[in-house]
Amino acid sequence: MSQLAFCPAGFPAMSATEDRLVRDARWSALMARAQEGDGGAYNTLLRECLPLLRSICRQRLREPAEVEDAVQDTLLTLHRVRNTYDPTRPFRPWIAAIAERRALDRGRGVARGLARHTDLEAADHIGVDGGAETKLMSADLRAAVAELPASQRQALQLTKIEALSLAEASARSGMSMGALKVATHRAVQTLRRKFGIESNKGEP
Amino acid sequence: MRTEDLVSQLAQGLKPVRRLPSPLAMLGLWCLFCAGIIAAALLVSGLRSNFVARLLDGFDLYQLMSAAMVALTAGYAAFQLALPDRDQRWALLPVPAVVGWLAIMGWGCLADFARFGSAALTLTTSYPCLYFIIGLGVPMTAAIVFLTRHAALLRPTPVAALGGLSAAAFASLGLSLVHELNAAVMVLVWHGLAVLVVAFIGAMTGPALMQRAAAV
Image (cartoon, rainbow over all chains, first blue to last red):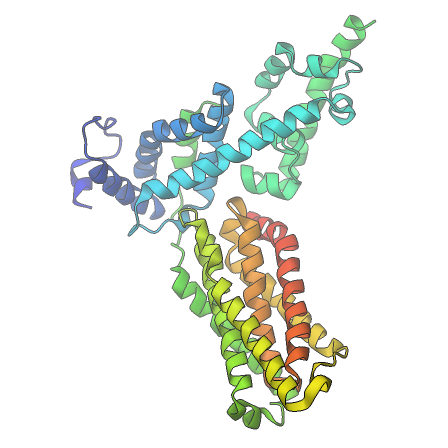
C-alpha cells in the first residue's frame, strides 16, 4: 500500500527495470482501490496491464484484430468479476487467467465462425447466394462490419459469429438481452442492405 | 472501439463492489444452508427408527462421514474453481472422498454378504431414494450455482458439476438420516445413481443458470 503514496492516479507507465514483485504489489493495491470505487486507480491499472494482456492474447491468436478483441473481452470480463479478486493474493495470475480464458474462447469462436461462414445460415443472414465463403471472407465485409457501431459489432460477433446464446452473449458483453437482440437485428439489417444490393448487381 | 477508450469507459463512474468472501467462508455458508434443508427434512419425515442402533454398528457412521466428506470437498472445490486464478486441479479434491465412499459401500456389501449370504445382494428398486436425492439435490444445486455465479464467464461446467456433486452428497446424507435402507448394495446403487444424476443435471443446466444469475 505504501507504494501508492508515491503513485498518484495517472502516473506514467513503469520502467522495464522495476522489480516485478513491486509492480505486482502495486497492481494489487490499485485493484483493491478499484474495488472500493476508485476509477482513477482502475484506469491506471488497466492501462498498465494492456501490454501484458496483449502479449497473453497474442500467444493464442494470430490476427492483430482478434488479439485486440480478446483484450477487450478480457477487460469486460474482469470488470464483471472484479469482486472475485482477493487483494491478499498476487494480481497477475488473476488477470492472466482471465485473459487466457478469453483468448481461448476467441480462438474457438474464430474457428467456429470460419466454419459457420460456409453454411447456408450465415449466407441467409447476409443475403448472398453462392460463393458465400469467399464473399464473407472478403475485405468488403470486414470493412462493412468494422463500420458498424461498436455495440452492434459486438452483438453480431457474439450472437452470430460465435453463436453464443443470448444469455451467454449478455454475460460476456454486459448488454441486456433486449439490447443485444436490437443491436444484432440492426447490424444484420445494415449488412443485408449493403450486400443484398451489391450481390444482386454483382452476381450473375 | 479502441481498447484505450473501453478502459476509460469502464473506469468512468466505477461503482464500489463488495469483495467475495473466501472459499472457506462460502463453504461455511453453503453448509449452513444444507444443514437447514436437512433439518427441515428431518422435521417433516422424522429420524429413522433404527438410526442409533445402526450408527453404533459402525457401517452407517462411516457411510455418513464419507458422504459428508464428499459434500464438503466437492463444495470447497467448487468455490475455489469459481475464482479465476485458482488451479484447475482443485477439481480433483473430492476424488479421494468419492473413492472412500465407494470403498465403504463395497465393504458394506461384503459384510452383508458374509452375514446374510447372497440374499444380502438382492437389488430391488427404491424409487423413494432416487426421488428424495434428486428432489432435494436439484434445488440445492441451484442454490450452490447461485453462490458460484461469478464463475459464469470462466469455467461454469466443472463448477456446476462439483456443486451438483456436493448438493447430492448432502441430500444423500439427509436421506440416510430419515430413510431406512439397510442393505449396503441398495445404498450403493440407489444413492450412487441419484448422486450421479444430480451432478449430471448440475453440469448440464448449471452454466446457463449461472449466466442468468450473473446477468441480473
